[in-house]
Image (tube, rainbow, N blue to C red; front, side, top):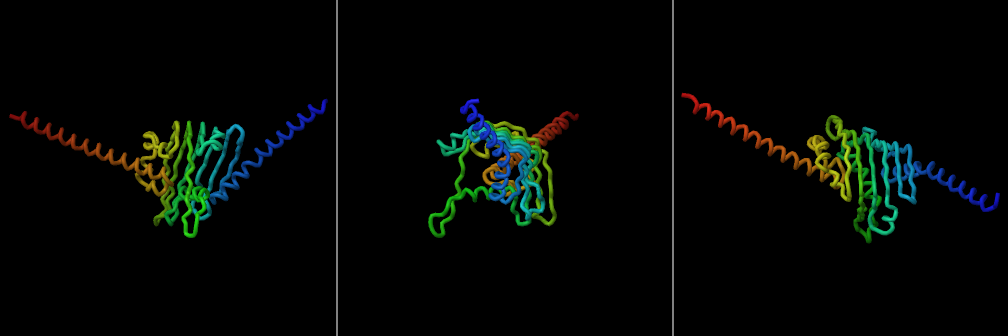
Length: 260
């Protein structure tokens, strides 16, 4: 066997060992980073990421609340698959994801006695981590908003649980949403609120303050969407009642005129 062949075999073996080490240690590294960034206990069963192709696969992700929360569960994610445009990070000011598939079994939003929710604190932790440093004494840190474009997004969400401990008695409600929807060219969270999804979240939005429970733009947009739908529904109901009263009055008049 020539020296060149041996060198190629050795190099191939080193690459294989490096790939195995990457796959073995990557979940632990990501778990540690997420715990440090958010304070939430994140566990991942399988995580593979190819930095050259931008292909990411996550299976069995579970995020649990910090000890201050009376209920431990937050997110149970069966699988996440992403195809990221690696060059978008280098040549543009936004992240481009060609395809993203999210399969979530459950999201449990827990509200503590002080009114804070786990979803809000989780999102705030990420925003605080991305804040820029102030440029002088007394200056307020500025939070940079990451621009993104998801060309194709598929979301599945089976169950939403709201556990509210802010009142005198704990109140837990389970919503079987069974959302299964595909989107195109998503660059804002409010684009997720298509009529089909709003219908699924309608009951939740009527009984809870969505703007406070859900963080940022999505919570505000959902509150507006549900409020608009409720307003239209009330108008339709009122119009239907008026039409019914009008028809009843008309029939009464016809009946009276028919009498001798």
